[in-house]
Length: 392
Length: 171
Image (tube, rainbow over all chains, first blue to last red; front, side, top):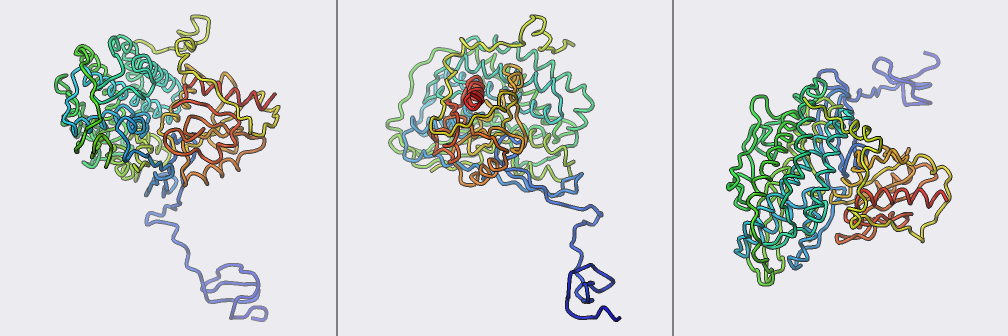
């Protein structure tokens, strides 16, 4: 060799030749090991960072997806980007309530009622029948709106414009119904201790058109083979570590309406809808959500017939003690544990369905088709706002 | 089976599919506030289409839903030349929602830097305007050209606010 010699690198690096690395003038014995970009099946993996702010995401959340392009091999999520500190400690209950309502706007009634149930538990107050039935109507209206939103987002992911618009139309109709009866589209300011600032007489009639049109869209979507094909076997998960429609779609009879004493669902002969047969995929969650819309309509009808006269509002001035309230929000159990001293909050802890269901979502995403990620994400109905929150 | 054709029902009336009952909901509809401190540049381009990119800095989720509601048949923002875009690189306006949160500062700044000139900011909701009852507002929202009040703002108020931002910067 006249031009090249063995030794240290001189000049630019050209590449690997046999067991050497070839430079402009030298051959160096330091062959770099090929980086492990392939797994045992020969699929090349790469990491796809989705979020925290990106089109298609309603809220700020980051997903780190390890994928081969076709299927998801692993996924982690970071829901802490939009972390909020809510100042409720040492505040009076009346001052803290508007902030609790804003833990999660879409589930505002569920959060407010769970919190108030905990306060009433601490005070030893049992709310009167009118308040309890009105609270059931509020939560069921919220469930209808949320489920319409979730299934509409699933249609959007499939680029199904007509059902997407129809369902969003119905969601807006539900919002206007809530506005009409409760004075606010998100129930802000509608609740108090043994108090309800809304009159739901006649709400069933207003909802009848939503019921009819939602059934039309549901039946049409079930006939669409393209839509059903993208949901079936997508995001399959069967675990007891989940709550709400996710658990019921996995064949589990988990429902706070059945096993919590905070609201009198038993008086309405409530029974939850649980998926049977092939369970635990996005299709099951889609079916459960639609069926629950119609079940909620029934519950509202029954609760409205039991509305009575309101007795007396409660006062928070002297409440001291510890209480817990648990409610079935549209996505599952939401619970509050509060410690009160002379009507002020000394300690408060919260359990939210989104925080419970997020790990289940992460597990369910593995080995799914990458492009079907959105169907699975939307089917879980997770709200980051109730995860990324701290009480201070 | 009955066909669900809401859009045909509207057409049969030879009018718009849905007219917003503004009188009925007048209480919830508020006037957007123009930020007099913001530097207003005149952008002829905004007389036509107007693309929006939204960033959630720390919301309760209600503002997100109300902004999304603009896509529903009731409001149909496209008829006014307004569109949502999935990337800040195609956006004319950055819509900021929610309170200040430390981790979102970088994301907000990156999104604004990625937008092509001319560009402007719209602050949506009480939290983005002043922090509301939760915290303080994001730093970037101080440069907003228009503030859209409400907790959350009614979709009709949002539409008004966006049109106002377009109008102020085009006059």
